[in-house]
Image (cartoon, rainbow, N blue to C red):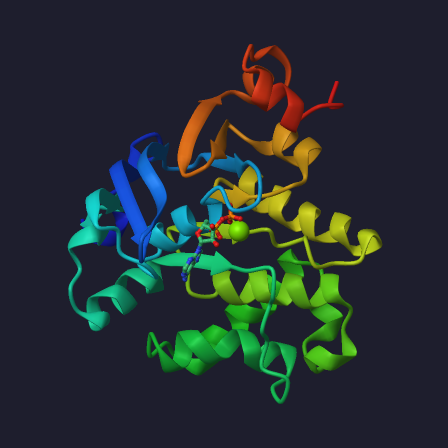
Amino acid sequence: MTASTATETGAAIVKLEDVHLSFGQTEVLKGIDLTINKGDAVSIIGPSGSGKSTILRCINALVTPQSGKITVAGTRVDQLTKESERIQLRKRVGIVFQQYNLFPHLTVLDNIVLAPTKILGADRTATVKLARELLEKVRLSEKADAYPGQLSGGQQQRVAIARALAMKPELVLFDEVTSALDPETVGEVLWVIRDLIRDGMTSILVTHEMRFAEEISDTVVFTENGRIVDHGSPQQIFHTTDNPRIRQFVGGLS
Ligand code: ADP
Ligand code: MG
């Protein structure tokens, strides 16, 4: 058994314990406790500036909290002191951002093949095969030889998802991945994420797509002002919560 396969379905794969993080004088995370089990889909919702992206960035070792514990797939992320250790961690935790940032001078296929071959040292032939399988999964097989500039925003975002999956991550973080898209291409990206979740990929999504969050989440977390105000099933958070702030925020979802 290797460290990277040690987490069994249903076991905690992400654990944040009393995480405090400040940027300068501003405390942005004020004691975050969060446990996510392998195979779960967790949505983080809440107003802008409440710390949602910062939580994801902590999990992915892009920022380090001043105090608290963060454990991801057996690794104490808060204790990683070397950039090389943080890079190791990031190989195992995929992240997809609002801005997909594909390499414009590389084809779709090469965008997907680049990181596994360069960073993991994976065999190119095997990686090309994997990339084609992933393109099929994100329903873009016919675009393998296109350049990003020839694709719609939704198509580019699906390539970015395939690129993250090509690293064979143990979990994937999605930070408002549909927020910059034209409304008519949001759905095609959500389909792809829904498929992934149904396949059992551990997924943490920051999203404003409330109905999607309701449909696909095992747990919904509501953040405000650097704290987790409440968490629970979609039914609890979207329909039966007594918390007036959450009711106001998710208002209209019936
Ligand atoms: P959300 O994703 O919920 O909108 P963020 O996690 O991006 O919130 O940000 C939480 C707070 O932290 C905001 O007030 C934001 O301005 C601040 N913040 C985020 N990143 C930085 C940074 N690198 N430097 C200083 N302040 C930051
Ligand atoms: Mg954000």
